Length: 320
Length: 320
Image 1 (cartoon, each protein chain N blue to C red):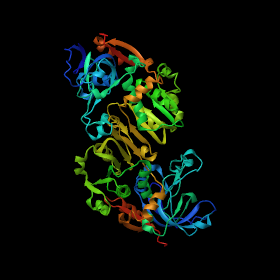
Image 2: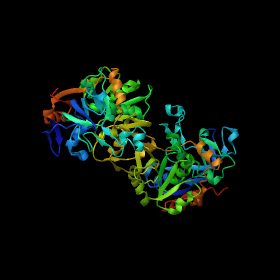
Image 3: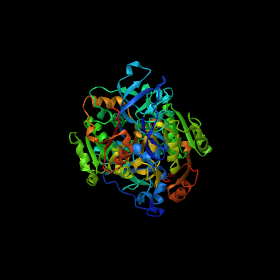
Image 4: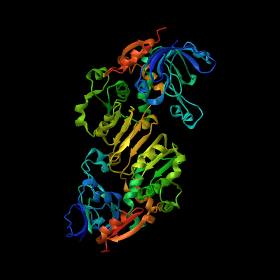
């Protein structure tokens, strides 16, 4: 079978099909999404080597649980110990001994067959297409914001960045009924939100909104995003840091203290919330899907995904 | 009358007694505390020039409100417009057109007589001594933390820094019944907490508590405090930034995102909470009071307050 491996260099390898041994559930890949984290791994961040990929929809090939076999599933990416204080609070995403699919200590989903713990799987309702299901993981990350802070209809919220993350976050936050502005650089991308109740603003024209937003979500993935967030947030407001960027930025903490700003780091979220939004057709992320490549063309797919302005690129298991 | 003026240089000036004109309340100073912010102003931060001082207890000399005359009072330092959206929410401390006593656009309390808006004043109960009343303003700033975050008895909390601010914050937070550790460098200062239920730890011995605290309060006033807070906080924990330090520090936001840390900037607080703690004798800050100087010796008092290891220095109106 084909597997997309990074070991300092990205390539597609031929590997033997793994046998089911009665432990974790064996999944046959249908479709998998390329995420910015995958691109960052190939740039040498995260120190991960192995099979890449953490966004996927697949079919259960073999499982200890016979009810799962043949089902279409998506899977949470953090495989937790189930025993520690975080796991006991339902926060396995922070389990200190967790492995993370295709990111940390565990081979990922960019291969024809792979293993995922049964506890991580969610059956996908028929109402959700394969294309939409590929977005469950990043959509759950967007939903995480609403598990961390309470956004009310009377709040004003800015989302910084019109990449995949910023667009998904905008779709999710628009469900709260708040006054929402997406601040980006690409009118064509921002147009994808035209069916949502979201104001779109070019970066330059955001100047006059200085110190006005109750919440600012930093989803630009750029160091400038942090400065922009500090400029747009009102005193006593909340900045949500959604994107990671690597390296250090100069930081003066005094304005945070003087204006009593809250900053909330936000990462992965619960899949239930994302599946609910897709099932109820409240959010349709598929307009973000721009390119499909067969698994064996993964290197070309990664090259495409890295091009400026490209949104979602997915890999398709051509066995299907 | 004598007034402690900073105009690029700190000095005690003789000025005419201000006449009451029917507007703001005229206060005769009893005692005033020197705060780190005062020291920072004399080092050229804040760009303030004028009469210094914002911590005080005094007697009302003249007021539009006859019931106040002769009363012993303390005063909130932010003089707000009373009309804007912040003021209407009871957050005059964030009013964009506020002046701040001895810090921004308004002469301060280091003079024999000075003006404060009537709305800013709180009558001090007889149960609270002048020495204790001088601490109401910094104690209110410590209480502000409990207005911003909910600390429960089962939480573990670290306070970084054994200066005035760290000691007051520890006294206040110990009232929650949480597991509290003060992490400092000066055993003699930390001993002042011996009647409180607070564990005291030297900085070096805090290593083994890495990633263990639910809350970390940064009150050290040093750039190292920020790094230390990031080391000690657990995933999903909350860092409270209490002290300002000037200048920029290198900051890598990725760990905040990965561990979903919350950072809360915290500044001034409500006086009611601090007066309550003093009235009920739940907190006695007076052991922090180390030196008293008459108003005319303010320059010497400032020199003393800047010496390493010195805690509270107060100015006394020798007219009393």
